[in-house]
Every structure is written in structure tokens, then in C-alpha cells.
Amino acid sequence: MHGHGEYKVPGGKLVVADVAIAAGRMVEVALSGDFFLEPDTALAAINAALHGQSSGLEQAALTGIIERALPPGTRMFGVNAEGFAVAVRRAIDAGEGT
Image (cartoon, rainbow, N blue to C red; front, side):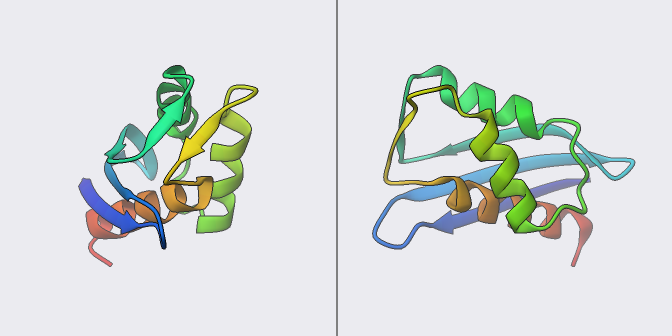
């Protein structure tokens, strides 16, 4: 199953999540949008941390995974960990048809 989710962070930028789900796990995660992250490796770290995680995780758990995945000193412009989590949760829900 594939899902697509979007979330506009209040006062911030658009976050887009495309997620592939197999056997209840996120097997592909691609986050994008009009936000900025420093260092550039932060986005890849988030995608990698979500890969393999259960598609049943609630938004708060996703937020925690994302926060722990961020390289030390990461700076986010127009987005936050919760915004990523909302977009991912929406993509999962869309992919699972709920």
C-alpha cells in the first residue's frame, strides 16, 4: 500500500510524506516540502529512522522517533518534528484507506 499525506505547519511550511506500507511496516518513506533543514543530512536521517517502523504508531510516537533521529545541532526552518509526524500519519492513513 502507498499513501500520500500533506500538512501545512501553522505559521510555517508545507510538509509532504509519501509512504509505502508492507506487512504493517513503513518500507519506504520520502519526506519533502518547502521547508529547510540544516544539516542537509537531517532529512535522510528522518527518512531512515522511519523506515521499518510500525504503520500503527500514533503521531506522538512518530514525533519522538523523528526527534531522536535528528543529528546534533539540527536547525529546522518552517517545520518541526510534529509537522513531519502529522504528514506521515496522514500518509499512512491514506494508504490504509482509513
